[in-house]
Image 1 (cartoon, rainbow, N blue to C red):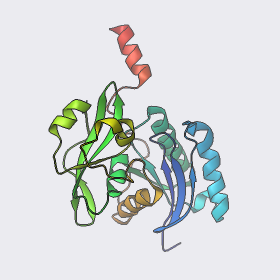
Image 2: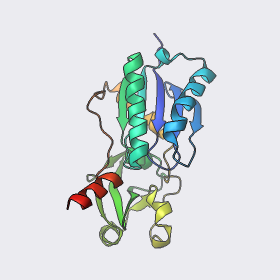
Image 3: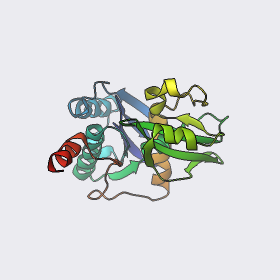
Length: 228
């Protein structure tokens, strides 16, 4: 058995995304996914290409780390179901990583606090505050949804802002320090968090792990409106 775990990384929470393979903390290869969000079409072929590139069989993969969101409902479902199916087929370990944790890890060293934001539609944002603890970032509150105006009024003046919300609401953030490089998750950040969970002996249940998605999907909202 290899001394370092061979891991498959999947992140499909937003526009675009990636898949990558790593051995221990060495990132061996990665593929960016099409930014038209055709994850259901592109993800499996991209995985097959990566494994062929590094000379691995599917059974060589010991763990699959997958971004849990929040983000695109369809993208999250495709990514997580792909991870579960792969783990089930080869007996690999499943490691779910909240996407906001990955983004917080990409915060510049000059920041001590950051609010990670993403567009929750209808003028609302997903928000979660983080604080630097040594070399790590820890959340100081649970993930929540609120109007953008409410976040602007309540945010800590010391906190920077990052995440895909920086792209969606750039014109509203003129007076807020923006953490460049946190807009989209990177393979190296996801790998770092996945390795920490692996080394701590943490594992996720194949049957019960769900994506992080606090609001109903568009189809669910339409169904509720029709019933109401």
